[in-house]
Image (cartoon, rainbow, N blue to C red):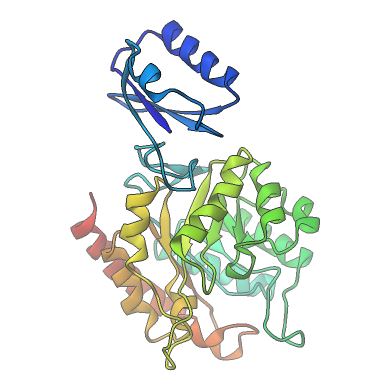
Length: 334
């Protein structure tokens, strides 16, 4: 249920209503916009008399929310969420480029790539230290050493870092990570999501390989209902009947998610296609679809990459692409 208050309501009257609603066993999510304040009622609202609340002098309207996700529902929070990472802003009209190698392999590699993507316009550095792999025999990342190398690259370039956390037992190692990524395979690791909800770090939540948008939003709900509202959603492709690309990039998810939620939505065309030559076209398409950011894998030596070299752009290819992305962004920017 949401309660929309009239413009200019006195604070003491608003607090009286909130206090009364909390006494009914509800949690209240407050969203203050320029012209109205929305109270999102979280919990069992079946015993609340809608007509009684609607009749109050300070109330403009009362509506039932039928969707199971509440905290991340745009009805609860009409204004776009802007997630801030240092000086970088994501969402609410702020567009961001995220780039870097699939896996951190060495100091020289990550620093070289970080400098190159920054020069091309990227504002956040990605890189995997812990890598989920289909085969237990494949390279699975440098782990703690990889995190340290990411920190070195951040010091050298000033770029905030985003990297994937796979196991809640490793959370303490991520104390100095700027954005924690939840990968597609962990999208419904609910214990992990709850624990990340108790942190104050931005969480980049990737859509699962075979998950619906509602399931993605419910995963975001786990994080937000535990107290952390700084969530960024990522469309990275889903499994379909295609047999030529790694996955299918669901670009319709971008405008649909923007309609359903106030959270920022970014697109990862690298994992969606798995083919470097297709990544630029899909990156441009994701930008045109209204994404709040594009995340791309870039490697200085893709042929010899330890992980996902086939989908990685070379630095010069990435630089050429970002010019086109910024051109498209000028056309579609709100």
